[in-house]
Length: 105
Length: 214
Image (cartoon, rainbow over all chains, first blue to last red):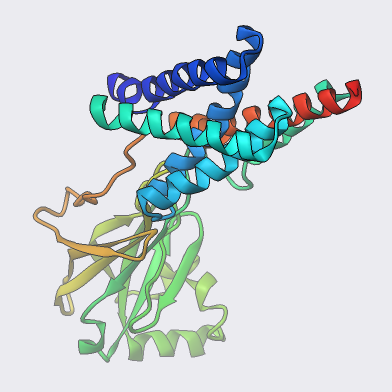
């Protein structure tokens, strides 16, 4: 159970919180809405990313790139913002979470 | 409307796990069979796999034969000459030889039973990388009185196509594959299927709701 928390649940919670902060800093909308969107986006993309990396024998960077592109579209659609801005937010969010991931995990 | 859709999708997702036959939840099938490695050295014998539920089946040379997952099987050896004679006597054809053995022990007096019983490999968890298990059997002794077989090695093939071979140290202990599922099956199912599916449903619902609000 400890392993599941360390390897899967904790990184997801951390990503949700970090991305929520980035959304909040850039989009400045209602915090509950931003948190909810961060929660659903990452609950969809994180397991997908891990699956691609672990089972589809995809390189870590390719998996990250695919997730970054997917998240950009989801951010753009959910927050109703232009793709360019969504790509920037997604890029920042993924860079920060990846760096935290490298440092902590 | 969306609420109903979510329930329908969840229901469909759950029932897909209830397979036909008796596959327990969280388990999967892996091909599982046995090969008698030195069967060709005994040209004058016919080998039959006998199962208490399914009856009997002739084993062809180099065939990887499966054992029914319920119950165990015994290998029978009978001299070709005796076997053919009985088939002719009872007017059985090759096809029906499968059924013949149910009543056979009365017919074939010279049948030899293997010293050990063979059981199928346990069903792996649904997220286990194991795809196929082949157990090799060696005939150690076969004469008028004795039919001794031994499980010599086992070959595990994984979903990525790689395989590994392990030798039997004891006949009572089946070697285990080195690669096992990292996650418990229920967590793998939740993490890789339920969670992203639910998230996707919610995302789609939010998008539809936002569109309708316009």
